[in-house]
Amino acid sequence: MKNRLIHTVAACAWLVLALSACGGDSPTAPAAPPEPSFPQVQGTYTGSMSGTAPWLTEPGGTVALAADFALTIGQNGGDLSGSWTLAGVAEGCVPGVGCVTDTVSGGGSMSGRVSESGAMVLTFADPVCGPITWTGNVTAQVFTVSGPFTLTSGCVAIARYVASITFVR
Image 1: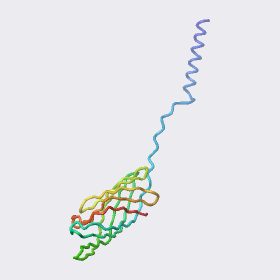
Image 2: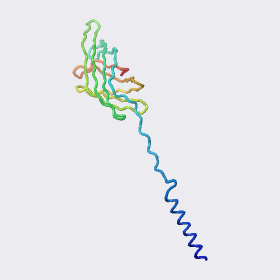
Image 3: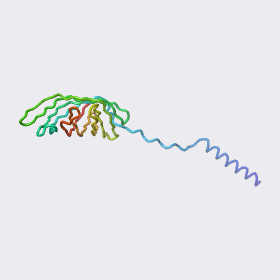
Image 4: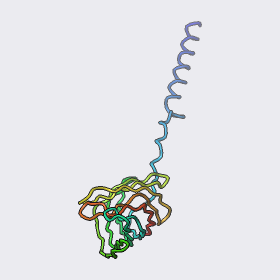
């Protein structure tokens, strides 16, 4: 009788183990972290800048600049790439000497990064004189960047502006 009781208990224990292995709740893998959600900024944007700065190569002179920017931005997650163009007019004046007006233009590639919060860093490559890096923020279809901008002629700095440009898609 004792052996039969042991066999019955062992058989019941085996049956309980077998049934619990055949269904019921199984452990689940931890949930994957959510994919980052970056603001969608790809597109074509335009913006204008204007300002007056000291004429670095002509003591006492100033250079007034009025220019339009265009940016074309491609996006892969938070990585940005594209191109930029600038076209405008600069007028340099030296007291007692006079003023000279000339067109300004430029363009090149652009790269950068946008964070989930909308903070941006953009680097504009100038094929002749080197890169310019600006920082900014994105909200809806508009973003504003700011940073130094150096007007050059043959890579000689003519005037340095602290620029803030609002771009609209």
